[in-house]
Structure formats: structure tokens, C-alpha cells
Length: 198
Image (cartoon, rainbow, N blue to C red):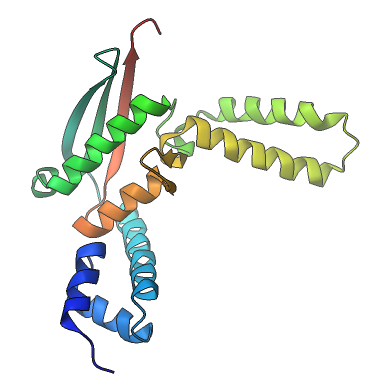
């Protein structure tokens, strides 16, 4: 099967993957561009997760964002591995998008892992108490509580939230996509949101 160079270039632009990876994925997908992009995104997410465990992010930027005529302000610290990536336009855009998202959604924590265990236990206890008298079996209540905690995480934890500009993408996916493109670990260290009268 002949591989069109313009198709490879187009896919590289969309995914940030290398020529060899794009060509191989395109051949495996039988020339199907959608399947190729999906396969490359999955591969990029796996690579990003592996890098996240192996590398240290000690460079980055602090992004400041003011919204609603100065009524809401956000400061977010976004880390990467090198100064080179910290100056990259895509990395800077990610920092801006995260600050804008935080201004709009007001999350309490960076990630589910950052929530203090006692807070999670309290939420689980409240959810369990809500269904204790329902007569449902304990295994069913446990699944319901699990679902409620998942929903609570998506309301209160930045990385678990759906991105305000594209609700099909979580913030974690957004970060992993940029991480895969730039080839470095990226993480939100911390953020702070200010609002007049809050």
C-alpha cells in the first residue's frame, strides 16, 4: 500500500508523532486516518504516563489570568522538564487554557490524588448514609457510592474535570496530549483562584 506523504504530514501536525510512528500506525490501520490518529493518541498517552513516572518536572511557568473585567483572577503553576519546553507556544497555551478553565469552574484540588483522605472518607460516608435506608444490597450501595465519588471528583478536582472549551476532553487528557507532543512530563503544581466578594 502506498503511503501519501501529505497524509503523513497532516497526521504528524495533528498528533505531534514522529514520521516513522505515523507511517507504521497508518499501515497498521490500513490507511484509515481516523484509526491512525486514535492509535497514535493512545500510544502518546501511554508514553506520557510512563514519562510522568520516570521524570522530574522542575521547569515551567506561572500563568496569571484575569476574567470578567477583573472580578476573577487565577494564578497557575505549570511544570515541565526543560526551559526549552517552558518557552514553547503550545505549553504556554496550555497554561493559559488551564487558568481560564480554573476561572470558570473553581476546582478545589489539583487531582483526586491530592484530596486529603479524610475528605474522601467524609464524602463516602455522606453518600453511604444517603442510601443506607434504601433497602438495596451492600454491593449495590458500594457501586452507587463509587459513582457518586467519581462525580464529586469531576466537580472538585481540576484534572478530573471536562475541559470548558471541549467537554469531550478531560483536563488530564489535555495535559497528556500536550505532554505527548512536546515529549516531556507536564504537571500542574498548584493554582489559586481569587474572586471579588468570595
